[in-house]
Length: 155
Image 1 (cartoon, one colour):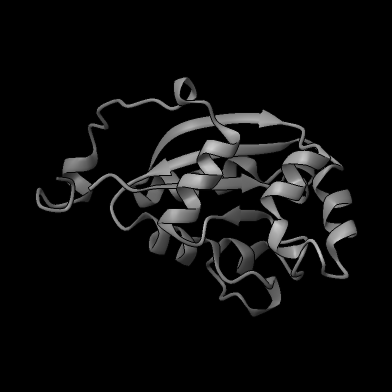
Image 2 (spheres, rainbow, N blue to C red):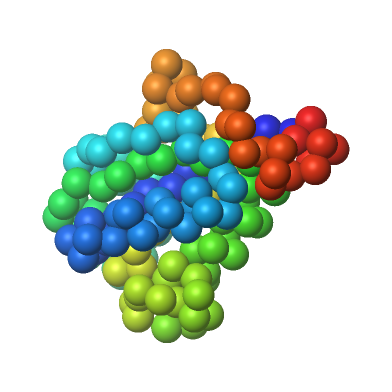
């Protein structure tokens, strides 16, 4: 089954030169990159994406942070994608994340936490549509899938 998720590589990761390290972790796990772009996020997109935080005390600071630098948006595809990516990324608060996860290795903050990762398949689809047009996502054969997943897992 083709499952997808959205990853936002945040300004702190770009400023700290962590882009290659982060993408490498997803690739080494065997996840397929089907969309990738850099953009600056404006108020409208941020208020839509973080609507669930709009009334929280940290929202203004979160918006300032997310507008402080361009971000990298990527769509990943693979079986059990949400669970796999959430394990690679680690919990929201970097100081609670296990060593070996992206946040565990590179973050001590709840806000400056390196990446955003969709928390469910439903939210992933909404988030992907928010940031990517259909023509910006690519379907192509990934030759190493047969060495990463069993035949049943990639159907």
